[in-house]
Length: 286
Image 1: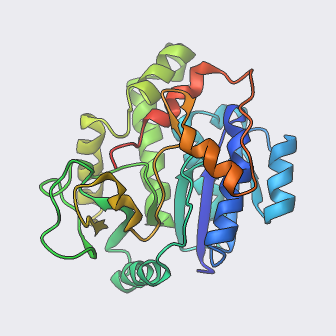
Image 2: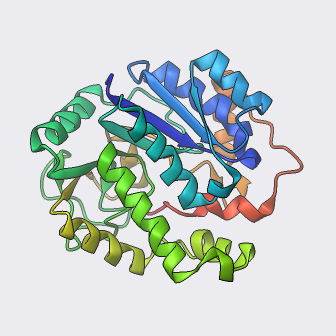
């Protein structure tokens, strides 16, 4: 896993989740060596704390790149420019892994990507299809994702990506967003509505763009088959976590209990802005 970067993008309103998030990763996935946090306020005490306590490398972002998609594109670009990594696992700070991942399956997925030599762009670590989908015809294992087998081609859920492919995909999303809703002609609130509440990347139009983009690049995607229709089937996946800790801007009770159990209690700041709450309403198809 030495050429795999584990990337979390966060914003001040959700920094309170970071100590628990990285505590869990270090505790249950110690093999994940290269942890990164990309944010526009890296000097914040909590960011400095996780860097010190968990060996997290901070990626400073310009305020101009603080948008939901732009921040991810900027962080991925910095990882690409470092020349250190071949793959990346981008995750949200409220995706909390609370048990040991399937290391064998992760290594197998990594080997599939490497042996494909760029033909396979990503390996989704959450089961597919989503919770309402039918059981896959075979036991849980890696299988191709197509628009016929899966409602979501692209999802913000945990996925092992080719770093180059992931970076180019997010750059393409940022370019598409700017072409359709230019910053110079769109108010910040309107842009937030489109990008986050309108789920620009994951909605129906975003899915069409995803398939077209990778068809033109002659790349495909694989994902982990679902064991069954029950919601907790997410735990039978290479990277088992319960998406998501924040629902409609509110911290789920199970996440609070998890924080207490793991020795990293969560304290929700009273000043948390509701304007960014809906960031955690996207990427929830699984």
